[in-house]
Length: 139
Image 1 (spheres, helix red, strand yellow):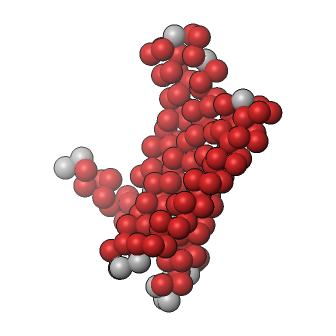
Image 2 (image 1 turned 45 degrees about the vertical axis):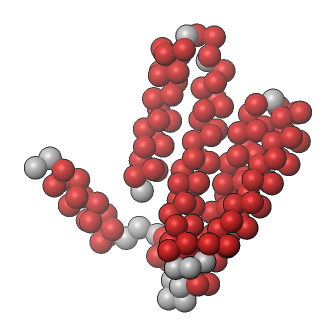
């Protein structure tokens, strides 16, 4: 959740931050940076799942899925970069992250038999938990 909140914050901050730091000639990097944000968030979530599997003695599952994601980044990046330039590579990164997360999610669900996709949806208790912790930060 933290990475999602930071990603949304950066989504609005990038158009101001990148040109002010690097100059107006880097305005084209704003769009590419915004395209990379979903991939960064997804890879962050994937790392949590990967570390959980490693901690439970299943390191090869994460290695295989990460390898598949990297291969997809390469294939999609090569194909799309020839057509739309650097944005194609950013799209490949995002698709590779989605493949990585989805694969690790299903492996995790298979390993932990009591898990389901319903657990990924926020409910009232989750929001209260977040609210309570944010409220305690100020103390």
